[in-house]
Image (cartoon, rainbow over all chains, first blue to last red; front, side, top):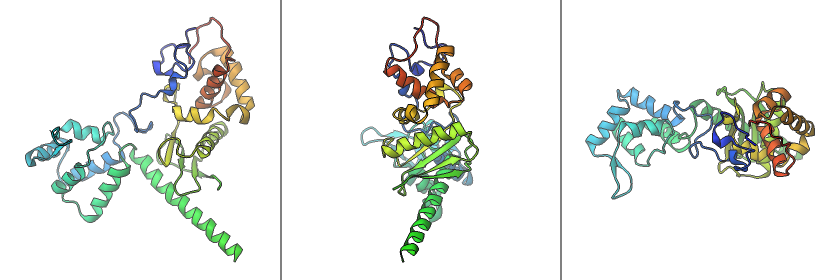
Length: 159
Length: 141
């Protein structure tokens, strides 16, 4: 039985040779399905905004990292930062190495508030598009407030 | 502990639902203008997440509209499979008949108004039980 016509192989849900094969997703691990191929993650959006505010772009930031000798990777396997890497971090194609927030702070000179924003985006925004990230933050606040109201009401009733 | 369900207007136009496990008890935001079928499918899906906490490795889950079979999230299908036929027997019957006629997931979804992820979940269950109609016609899923 030929079940597929013009649909990617991973969708052969009911094909005889690929039992439940569609359950094997081809999306990069951890990357949200709603993240468009060319779209920035929330982290990418924040990083790009800070770069632009200081007159940098991906290429000039990478060049500045190289000029200062800022490298990423494990000891013995350290490598220079290139524009392509910066782009991949911003698009959520690869995870941003943990050294980068410190490098970004050294080059861009964050205020305390900017550092918090960058850190939040780095920690939670690397797989999520901007709008979805803001939806998540807003909904969690709303949900928390609702639960707080409920518990206050139930305490009042008991009292 | 009870799952909280809210109507929500998302910034992200493709988001249909957002499930959060933190703070507890979990809550789900459902897009406020979903069709009744899409809403029901998302409710059943998040009930699946609720009954298997942290099955997806994070404390939140985005549920996006799937414009075609290629965009259906496998986790949505997994979450729906255990309950879908018991909860929506009319969908199960419509999908079985639709599959006999069209042999195309997207066409079945279009004709029956059953959301894509639910169509796939029902077909997977039928297939697992060897109840999927099989003929030597060309089929597409």
